[in-house]
Image (cartoon, rainbow, N blue to C red; front, side, top):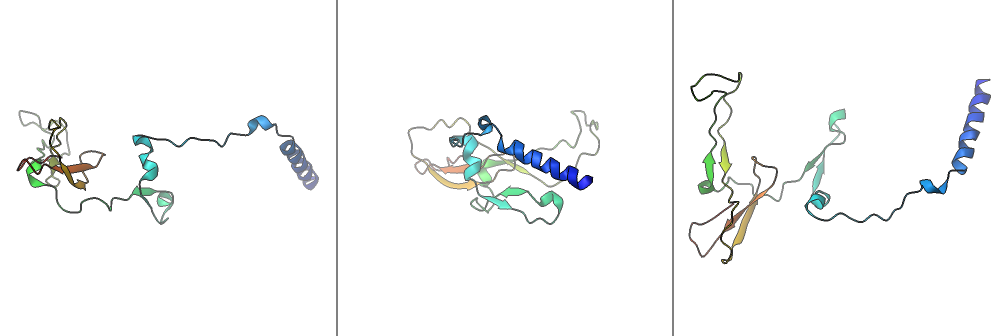
Length: 147
């Protein structure tokens, strides 16, 4: 009884698949995206080995093209930590403190030098933001570099 029921069910499914309406077909003409949101398609990615179920489908962005040295020291400043204390020194947030010293990059968002040529010296990784930053050198102005 069970084999006959399964065999009958399979033939019914095949009949339905043959009579599937044509309005379910999708168009394959898809325009490629453009702009900054589509740059992830052009970014190099590194596929992780499936050493566990969590890493099976993980990818990482390849940052091998970035500067591997330390940041340009005159354009960094120390990150002041509060260790969970307020202005009077009382602990307001528990279990904060310690950690490594960090320096943040000072980024020139105004970019008010328009009429002078500049050269992109290198592209660096910035742990303080999700974007990469470029070190710009103005050769005509001595010591006027900017991120």
